[in-house]
Length: 209
Ligand code: SF4
Image (cartoon, rainbow, N blue to C red; front, side, top):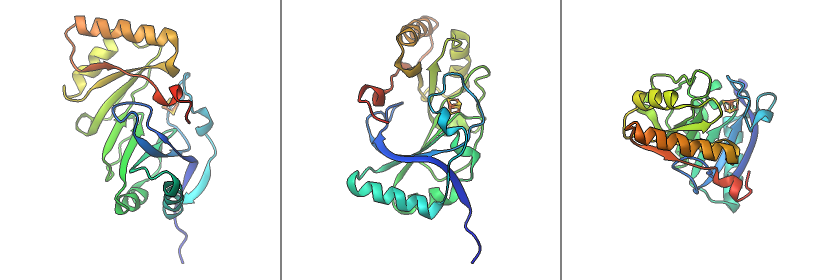
């Protein structure tokens, strides 16, 4: 029998979605190893390297095991940068189980997958996003890093349809970042920008992974 392709996985765990518009929803997270960027503020640096090899079927098995005690309807494919790896077979299997799928990506890579929710988070310094996300992204999360400024917010607001919200998310819920987010929101409002929102990391508040 031919060997099944494997995916590098850092961890699989149940939690709530702490970020973005899906905030608060029970979710099984599959964190993939490897990232195309090296953000200084990254809070998942442990996922940049290494990881365990699992086939898509083995990952599904682990998800189903977790769902016995934590029957979440959503699965979030995250990282690192999950789209460095071909997740099509896994997405197909998850969908077959009628699970809803979210992908969290830094938006430097695009893969067309049968998923419900692309959550993109463009990163400094370039805040580059692949053009496909203009129509595919359900939300644009911006970490309020020290380098984030109104010029970047304006550029991204222009790039995405008005119905796609831009969320200003404090860096690790730090006080200076919360304050900067509020300043940026006010400046954005004064500049006439629409659908910009403040956000937070709910899982930190609940001390969840
Ligand atoms: S893109 Fe995300 S996972 Fe990758 S280094 Fe930046 S914050 Fe970390």
